[in-house]
Image (cartoon, rainbow, N blue to C red; front, side, top):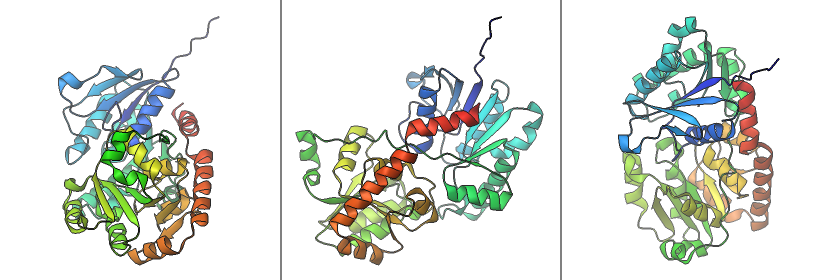
Length: 364
């Protein structure tokens, strides 16, 4: 008798689509679909995209386009419609983030397996107004309660979910080994980014208040002998625009607009001396584990999630004054030792091979 192995059909909901251009959820989706395509039939829901740019499939996954944006006010409708469509055609739903989870109580009769990637404490972010925060807290609670399995990307979130909702979750972090070291820099890169030949501190971050870029800039304003390079989407928020205006005049501070060419970004990341991670509300931040995979010393904002990610082996700050002290008083040998520790942790915990195996166990 011939045994037929039927692959489950799994929808991935809540991303900006494929191919991945940026973002942790998008990179995760790229790796899931490429590494598990022989075991799972994936359907990936994608936001509004010009017809000429649409693909029918990617990494073997079927792409379904909806007429909504993946970010902003339309993102809730985008997620809800994706969930509604997929319960009719898929065996399991991997829902990335809880924004659309408000619909889940109505879908119990479909007997589908709902897998929620918790995403993080979005309702605590300062960028949201009171009504949005209330909605996000509500959808968080609904998502956790009505999902068959919950995935959390940081041990702090695992602890929070158990304490807040009395529910166990599975810890699955992010891979960072797609960030590769660039050793031989092209001359044109040196021409465009002359600091590549110098000793510089680096931060790559979205320009939003709870990412605390202002702490870094204020610290280096008083550190004229140390160079800081910050890559960010400055022009997408008042916060970013104000910082760019205020700190563009300092010779030791270089403010670069967001870089989406990974070859260029990897060259800049590879050349830095120390990485500054200033996020306060992320979980296991992809930008952090990428730099840990490169073996870079890390100075991190003193948030519980960052302590968990780095196993408390980085150096931590709470203020601009803390940063100044760490930059001036930490020896090169101590920094290099921290870099070695970061790489050891990353190789043990934050490679895509490890992450995909963990997801497969939950998705089966």
